[in-house]
Image (cartoon, rainbow, N blue to C red; front, side, top):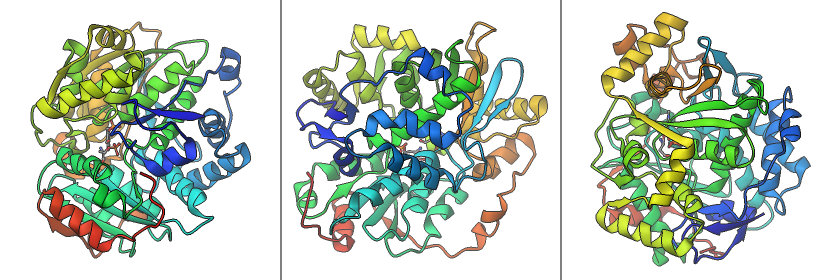
Length: 470
Ligand SMILES: Cc1ncc(COP(=O)(O)O)c(C=O)c1O
Ligand SMILES: N[C@@H](CCOP(=O)(O)O)C(=O)O
């Protein structure tokens, strides 16, 4: 499988190179040259398969030419062997129409583990023969950082520099990152928002002074391999609820548009999807884009769902590229406009095509709290604030009653215990394996939200690599 950049001028690459590169050299994001297709018979045959087998089957077309099926299956078994639930991503029924897809049974209790446990192994697989070293630079609003650090701590070929916005992640999220003391892990708390951190990461890929000396790579969802692994659970949930013989709707708590873009990919591959519901908090750029074509950042408001406090949604570019007839030059122009004005409009074609599959809804803090209370009082489920936003959206969008609506439960409630307790009166305990997290020693550095300081910090600690890829 070959991958092309959304901005049209970077070279096309194979899966292996795309995984190691992260972001394309023209600033774009890689997408497969075409969407692999599954027939209805192939989808029907997925029912009842163990998660790892299904994962390898769904991902095989994307890795073709870089990994054989046996190797992919073995990596899936290793990655998902660390999950605390045999089904990896189990479904739980809430009422006649609503389901939760529990994505938080991995080591760090959030959906990011599904992709990052695999990505850590893919890096190792692709770097093992040779003297190559990756400098992973990431930005996190809490969950990507902890999942990436768990997946990469102690790995010999990788250093991780993880930027989080100081004071804007939950205590559990911060400690899941900062209590990992492995020598290859560098946590940096920056002044500013997640968007500021993400902008610095993207800028580093364009900075020749850095890319000439270090082999910079990404663990954020700008890295295609992240999204590929997330496509799998849409198929797993879909076939469990009757696909290909009936359509399923998914409600997805959204920030960087990665998780819901994976749902779009599943639909493009043949999964019958009735609707993809884009659920946002008050940082609602995506809700405005889908309802009114206005994609304009308005400054970030900190909320009790901090992982979704995002106004520049990286993966929206992938959608706009695909909906805009894959015109890389036009996409580069649109993104230039957005970078300069922090605002742009979707073209009429992009807006109308998005509306054919996506619906959106926005939850205020009160609506999020009410959804947490509804879940516990009506169904006995304690859900985290991000999942609650998904549930609010799922219940507020009108869908035919025969269509199952699956809300992606993106994090364990214990990651956000104070917010859950404030809404429901119930304190969700951490699972046993993390019970002493609040007593562990922390290590991180604090830096101003200034690119030059951050890049100097990284340059002083990263390993120079003689084999740059950019
Ligand atoms: C718990 C949680 N829910 C939802 C999201 C939003 O996912 P995405 O950025 O893929 O849209 C995130 C972060 O990305 C998250 O950590
Ligand atoms: N919510 C994320 C933000 C980063 O998003 P990503 O999916 O692009 O890595 C987080 O928890 O860090």
